Amino acid sequence: MAAVLALTAVGLNLVFGVMRVVNVAHGEFFMLGAIGAWFVTQYLPVPAAMAWIAALVIAPLAVGAIAALADVTVLKRLKYDPEATIVATIGLLYIFQQAALSFYGPDARPVAPPFHLRLQLPWFGYSGYKLFVVVAAAVILLGVWLMMTRTRAGLVMRATQVDRETARNFGIDVDRVYAGTFALGAALAAAAAVLIVPIQQAHYLMGHDPLLLSFIVVIIGGLGSLRGTLVAALIIGLSDGVISMFFSPTLAKIIATLAVALVLVFRPQGLFGAKE
Amino acid sequence: MTGGARIWALHLALVAVLFAALFVLPTYHATNLARIMVLAVFAMGYNLAFGYTGLLSLGHAMFFAAGMFAMGLPTWHWGWGGGPALLLGLVAGGAMAGAVGLLALRTAGVSFMIVTLMFAQAGYLTILYFGQVTGGDEGFVVEAAARSLFGFDLSSDVPRYLAALALFATALAGCLWLVRSPFGRVMVAMRENEERSRMLGYDPFRVKLAALVISGLYAGAAGAAYGLLFGYVGGSFATIQYSILPLLYVLLGGAGTVLGPFLGALAMFYLIDITSGFTSAWLFFVGAALVLLILFAPKGILGTIRERGARWLP
Image 1 (spheres, rainbow over the protein chains, first blue to last red):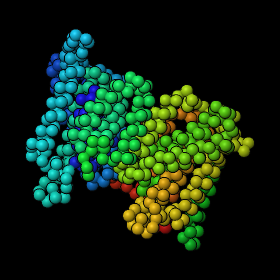
Image 2 (cartoon, one colour; image 1 turned 30 degrees about the vertical axis):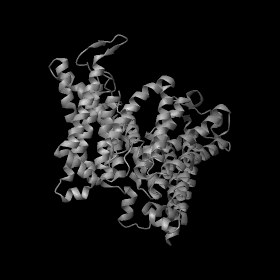
Image 3 (cartoon, rainbow over the protein chains, first blue to last red; image 1 turned 60 degrees about the vertical axis):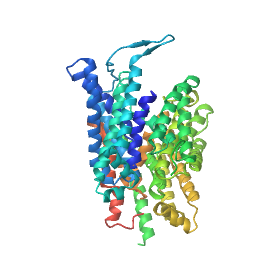
Image 4 (cartoon, each protein chain N blue to C red; image 1 turned 180 degrees about the vertical axis):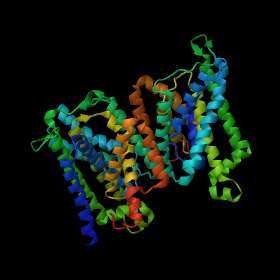
């Protein structure tokens, strides 16, 4: 759970860090990824495992394309004004949700995992697929990190993050960077959803919880700080289970949301955030 | 006519038209209009915070629900009458806004939106958590005995419409008076340039807190009236959707205009009413309306009219 949460939250934070946009529709990209995975596995005439792997490629690409389109048609025209973009992404949230409801329907549908494997440790059995999810999420995160630190695209993104105007003066096409970042953030959420969908089910309202949790993770980890996000995702993902063992899930959520609000009020840079 | 007289005449005319509408409209639309007027009061409160003071809150559902539950719970558990319960709802909305404001106003901009959103979410979950007291997700029906005010039965159509109109007219007059008062000017100054207002000797925190409390009073009154007039109190009124509705109304009608919230509520209510007649996809229209508004008409209907000539509109 923590691994998938980290993927989703890193996507959200990437968008915030580079573009200064709080993407309220992020959970819907997660949902679209899961539903995309269902459509791919349902209609691709290949064995289940192959179809799932195809979904892992196709769904994030498709969701990324939708996100890039949304960026170019809506967010760019708002000149990335923070408050206007929040209103616009709330609008997008409703549109995506309704689209999913209309074309996919109100039921939750399962997606078959690519393989069934049960690791039998001496004390307890463990689903092999869950371990695979952790590994896969870690690989994708490593890929993102390598891209941000080692490649030209990452360099360009970080340059844009530090100073949009100077980056533009150096001949960087800032609009393209933004569209790419928004697409990448959405694709990460979609990839997380494809990974999780064999465990959970695809449902048109499933974007709500990941959004809230990602917000919590990003805020606790520090807005714009990728390393903080990872640490916070691990802590929250693991502690969520622990807290819900002692309290009812509703109470756990109340505590978590209040904690986030108070962190934002008293330590806006996040618990592990970089100094401004 | 002088500017002031013209403005008051316009708003009085609207109230008069709404009064006349009771005798002209069929019952179905009259009930709709009563609902719209109560929601417009909610939106007016939202507008005082967002449109005039520049506080984009995503937590107003909490103030609305605070008013609604502060009205509903005493009538349910202790058999209070409608009048005192309504007053308690009004106060609860303001008190809740004050408490949230004390914390949330230490932040600004995007953080303020997220903090209010989180508080509202916590408020909603609290209502669910104490489901035995609050009725939780299912809510409860307000007792018929409590649904009367000064001897009028609020569950029948005509008194209900008049009560909604009375609330609306009071709120409208209060709002108009407030934004034309010196304090209203200071609120706008906060929106336009906080630093400069601070230089002029105003305390931004206190001004914003006061604006938020007034906004909460409006939301609380609207929530209490909604529960009392339509006889149902439920946790669903505390969900984020009810924070976004007033934002939508205000954006559509025109942020920072006195009549904008009512116009926005009216237009949006009938947009949903008509579209849901032939498609169940009304959520799509809400989303599309939000995106299109923020893209092409960020000033809303009245804001655009004001820009195009009628500069005297308050």
